[in-house]
Amino acid sequence: MLLLLHVLMLSLLSGGSARVVQDFEKECGQFFANGKSPTRFPNPQYRQICQTLNNVVYYATFYDTHNKIPVYSAYKFEGLKDCKRQKKWYIEPQLDDNNASPNMQFEKDVKKQGRGDHQALKRDYMKSDHDKGHLEPVFQANSQGCANATFTLTNAAPQNPSFNRGQWRKLEEEMARNLSDQCLPKNYSVYIVTGVVPGTKNINNRVTVPSHFWTAYCCLDNNNKCQVSGRFIGKNKNNAPENKSEVDLKKELETHYNVASFELFDYSTEPPAKKRKLNK
Ligand SMILES: *[C@@H]1O[C@H](CO)[C@@H](O)[C@H](O)[C@H]1NC(C)=O
Ligand SMILES: *[C@@H]1O[C@H](CO)[C@@H](O)[C@H](O)[C@H]1NC(C)=O
Ligand SMILES: *[C@@H]1O[C@H](CO)[C@@H](O)[C@H](O)[C@H]1NC(C)=O
Ligand SMILES: *[C@@H]1O[C@H](CO)[C@@H](O)[C@H](O)[C@H]1NC(C)=O
Image 1 (tube, protein in one colour):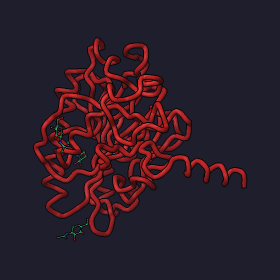
Image 2 (image 1 turned 90 degrees about the horizontal axis):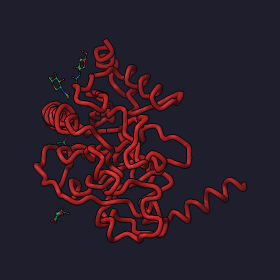
Image 3 (image 1 turned 180 degrees about the vertical axis):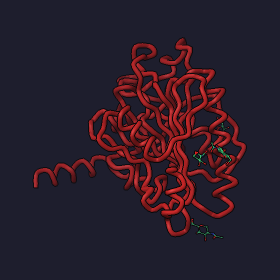
Image 4 (image 1 turned 90 degrees about the vertical axis):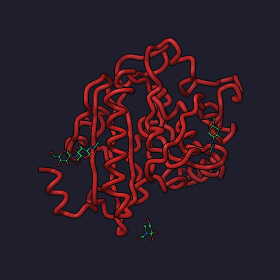
């Protein structure tokens, strides 16, 4: 009963417009295949963000306030849109102050007190010789508004510049082209999750440098079955990311995150014939 009250109070406190939310499956589940998010870790250092810019929600991010990098961003791909890159980066006001704006904002527009206590800021990257590596990339954004909304530091992690501009970028582009060819013409809904694994180094004594970047997609047909899927993971240096089977990426991420189970999508909905082929 007490627990129930507690949960009730928390959900009341989190309010309707808050963008750091208690349950992003409930608040912005449209970015997850079949409404089901990848695994969420229970520790309080993790926060769930419905990424909002000018009151429009564009994607979802599971954020690690301790390492000050995301675990993953989840989004839908709707085709190559040729969006422009904006130069400035936003931050998430509600990570440092529950009562702050539900919209991502430029740092200068966010109250100074407490700012950056639970997230990375521009200055963390300044002399770091690392790029602000997008999780959801501009190249896969489905509108200019969405492309703008990818420029938030909660959707970025320190990335080796030659990796970011080389092999990782190549993968992002190839993936977008493949999905445009293989899934969109069939009217499949394309769901992508892109994440990082925290490593042992940091920048500015504040922000953890990932050891790995990974990405996975699942194209759902009209019966919500995963018809086409793929997964890649690469070390945070400029080697080609590896194509992984469902089982292998799952195992690798379980080891990296030190958890018993890490689920990306409900692949069980995948047709058996396809599944056998993919696991070969
Ligand atoms: C995206 O950002 C650019 C520059 O920051 C701005 O001029 C443009 O209006 C924005 N577009 C949308 C759709 O928000
Ligand atoms: C794209 O498709 C080609 C041909 O099927 C395949 O060899 C390649 O690995 C795919 N790449 C990605 C990133 O999906
Ligand atoms: C495409 O899929 C959407 C749902 O994702 C559905 O509403 C629409 O009717 C479909 N269009 C066609 C041409 O099948
Ligand atoms: C990954 O490798 C498997 C097995 O070689 C292959 O069937 C599949 O098409 C590859 N996937 C992508 C996206 O390249």
